[in-house]
Image (cartoon, rainbow, N blue to C red; front, side, top):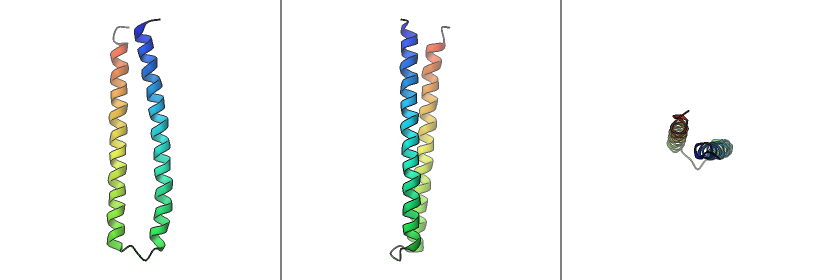
Length: 87
Protein backbone atom coordinates (compact mmCIF):
# COMPACT_ATOMS: atom_id res chain seq x y z
CA UNK A 1 0.00 0.00 0.00
CA UNK A 2 1.20 3.49 -0.83
CA UNK A 3 2.74 5.41 2.09
CA UNK A 4 0.92 8.60 1.10
CA UNK A 5 -2.43 6.84 1.17
CA UNK A 6 -1.68 5.33 4.58
CA UNK A 7 -0.64 8.75 5.89
CA UNK A 8 -3.80 10.36 4.51
CA UNK A 9 -5.96 7.70 6.16
CA UNK A 10 -4.18 8.29 9.46
CA UNK A 11 -4.74 12.04 9.16
CA UNK A 12 -8.43 11.54 8.31
CA UNK A 13 -8.85 9.15 11.24
CA UNK A 14 -7.18 11.57 13.67
CA UNK A 15 -9.25 14.49 12.36
CA UNK A 16 -12.44 12.48 12.84
CA UNK A 17 -11.41 11.54 16.38
CA UNK A 18 -10.51 15.15 17.16
CA UNK A 19 -13.78 16.50 15.73
CA UNK A 20 -15.88 13.99 17.66
CA UNK A 21 -14.02 14.66 20.90
CA UNK A 22 -14.15 18.42 20.44
CA UNK A 23 -17.90 18.36 19.70
CA UNK A 24 -18.53 16.17 22.74
CA UNK A 25 -16.55 18.53 24.98
CA UNK A 26 -18.34 21.54 23.51
CA UNK A 27 -21.74 19.93 24.16
CA UNK A 28 -20.72 19.06 27.73
CA UNK A 29 -19.55 22.65 28.26
CA UNK A 30 -22.83 24.08 26.96
CA UNK A 31 -24.93 21.82 29.19
CA UNK A 32 -22.81 22.61 32.23
CA UNK A 33 -23.04 26.32 31.42
CA UNK A 34 -26.84 26.13 31.33
CA UNK A 35 -27.01 24.37 34.71
CA UNK A 36 -24.56 26.79 36.33
CA UNK A 37 -26.37 29.82 34.88
CA UNK A 38 -29.65 28.63 36.41
CA UNK A 39 -27.88 28.27 39.74
CA UNK A 40 -26.39 31.78 39.50
CA UNK A 41 -29.73 33.33 38.64
CA UNK A 42 -31.25 32.10 41.88
CA UNK A 43 -28.20 32.27 44.14
CA UNK A 44 -27.89 35.18 46.56
CA UNK A 45 -24.17 34.37 47.03
CA UNK A 46 -23.03 35.91 43.75
CA UNK A 47 -23.10 39.64 43.22
CA UNK A 48 -23.98 41.14 39.85
CA UNK A 49 -20.34 42.11 39.37
CA UNK A 50 -19.26 38.54 40.09
CA UNK A 51 -21.78 37.22 37.56
CA UNK A 52 -20.41 39.63 34.94
CA UNK A 53 -16.85 38.45 35.59
CA UNK A 54 -17.83 34.79 35.30
CA UNK A 55 -19.81 35.46 32.11
CA UNK A 56 -16.80 37.30 30.63
CA UNK A 57 -14.60 34.36 31.57
CA UNK A 58 -17.03 32.02 29.79
CA UNK A 59 -16.93 34.14 26.63
CA UNK A 60 -13.13 34.17 26.66
CA UNK A 61 -13.08 30.41 27.14
CA UNK A 62 -15.50 29.92 24.23
CA UNK A 63 -13.45 32.20 21.96
CA UNK A 64 -10.27 30.33 22.89
CA UNK A 65 -11.92 27.00 22.09
CA UNK A 66 -13.10 28.32 18.72
CA UNK A 67 -9.59 29.63 17.95
CA UNK A 68 -8.07 26.27 18.90
CA UNK A 69 -10.55 24.42 16.66
CA UNK A 70 -9.83 26.74 13.72
CA UNK A 71 -6.05 26.36 14.10
CA UNK A 72 -6.33 22.58 14.39
CA UNK A 73 -8.59 22.36 11.31
CA UNK A 74 -6.12 24.53 9.42
CA UNK A 75 -3.24 22.24 10.37
CA UNK A 76 -5.18 19.13 9.34
CA UNK A 77 -5.86 20.82 5.99
CA UNK A 78 -2.17 21.66 5.57
CA UNK A 79 -1.17 18.07 6.33
CA UNK A 80 -3.75 16.75 3.87
CA UNK A 81 -2.55 19.19 1.18
CA UNK A 82 1.03 18.10 1.78
CA UNK A 83 0.18 14.46 1.01
CA UNK A 84 -1.95 15.42 -2.01
CA UNK A 85 0.80 17.48 -3.71
CA UNK A 86 2.16 14.68 -5.86
CA UNK A 87 -1.16 13.61 -7.37
